[in-house]
Length: 74
Image 1 (spheres, one colour):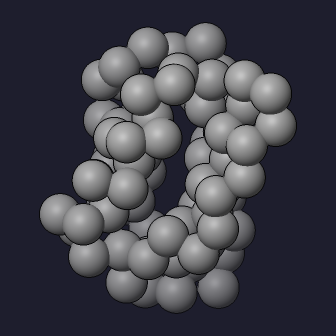
Image 2 (cartoon, rainbow, N blue to C red; image 1 turned 30 degrees about the horizontal axis):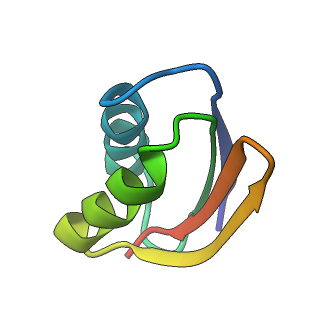
Image 3 (tube, rainbow, N blue to C red; image 1 turned 90 degrees about the horizontal axis):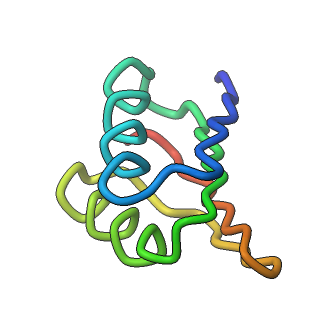
């Protein structure tokens, strides 16, 4: 199992979702992707993306403007 952090701070919609999709496509089942975003729309876009891909959102944290998503590749 591998864990990777993707720093998407400062990127605006739709780039966080597109880069998250690309990173997930290169991962193996069971791997963990941690995505850090500052775009407020990522709070909607990332969960919607995971509904499409079937990957699992294990945790979402919000600290001021920073949102962190912990995703397990299905």
